[in-house]
Image (tube, rainbow, N blue to C red; front, side):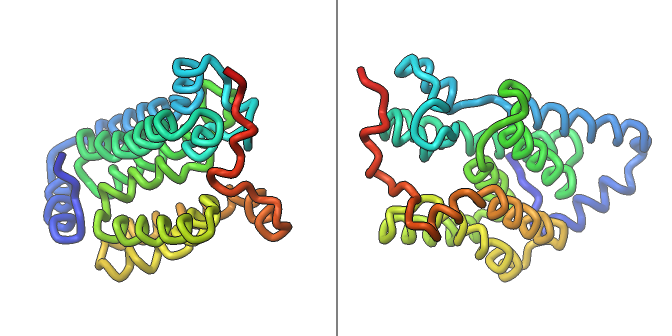
Length: 229
């Protein structure tokens, strides 16, 4: 998949704007991207993996979240990796839809936002969901791979030394706008990352409260919360 970045964005977007495609068709394409991105993002991978692997609803255990961290606590490393990879893929597919139907950075961002929204307010979970970290990672990984690598290293270091996945996610989100800005990414992408970072931190409010109170669960320290075989 060819993803538009700072170097190719101006020319590609210019071609898209100067084409003969009617505005109405462009609006229809945006609608297709947003709707499909949202539906794909809504797929509750954590719930599906928990049901298939262990026959359990992971929302009833651990933190009650459907993301990879709670999947690790409840299901173990292998299923958690499957949840992480498939949640990342949802974000990538949103970006891919924007590229296929619109061919602009704005279109890719629209697809990515729709996928993140679907993950956080899933159509299949009565508009409840996860924190959007892994799906957002998939979006940024395609649009700005070098900053994403740096942010992943930061996240991994924080988790390794503190054992708090939530703290790693919060600090990586806080550093994301600066990392993307320093990479010379398009302005649209920078402001998207600013909004996405603020959103991720906002969604981690309960984690921040538990961290400050010393009650946040550390990774690998909640094996007792796994369902019995």
